[in-house]
Length: 309
Image 1 (cartoon, rainbow, N blue to C red):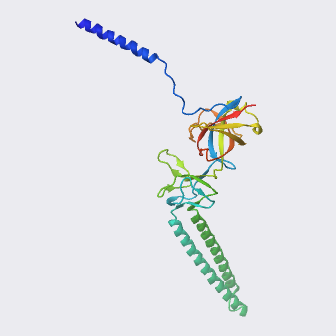
Image 2: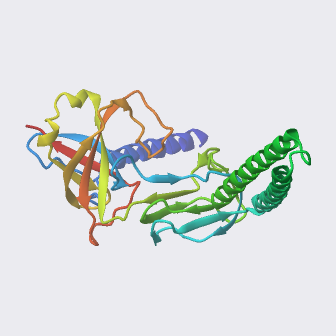
Image 3: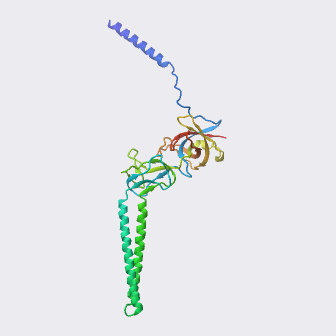
């Protein structure tokens, strides 16, 4: 009886295995893509990665670092806000610098009073000497005159010190360097900032206190062409390119702006500035018009095709 049961169970196992093999051998139908992948719009074209940036005369976005260190007391802007040149972005605690300015003002007042006293003393000595040379000696006149010169120099030094402290006090208020849009504010109220930026506990790196872009009526895309494809690229004045926005079927024609004629290690695989691989690329910059129908933002990765001759 036990032997029959073993044979029955074995037969059931073999039948199950054969059925499973048949079911899993049936080819499945792949799901349709959510969007159409980037395709080459040209008869002959080369592919390149790109990253969207705000339009700048040179360089990329504006990374803003304070020139002094301290604790942030006020943040007066938010991400996405359009600001004019000179708009206050955030204010750093300036209580210590205010005290330094008060001390410098007091020193300047003392120096001014000392100069007036020295000038009065010199004028008295000079008047007495003019009346009668026997009342005051020439050495006393010279000493009084030298005292005026020293007091004047001390006043000049105190005035310069006061002006320097006043300029330094202004640096505790960080302002927008130009018209633009606030893209990121990494400094919150109570956080510590320095000329090295703001420490990010997640990445262990120092981020800029704020990031700004130019007004986003015009935007740019920085394209990285692999070095093995550079030789096939047409001259800059004949460059034609088209951008594909990932996650959509949007195709955007690009206008060539400039080339960064320096082949450097590729870093834009995941938009991580510290990421480097053993591939070198040639950066090209193209411009395109930002419209309401085109939902793209600085830092976004895109696909670009360049037309070959």
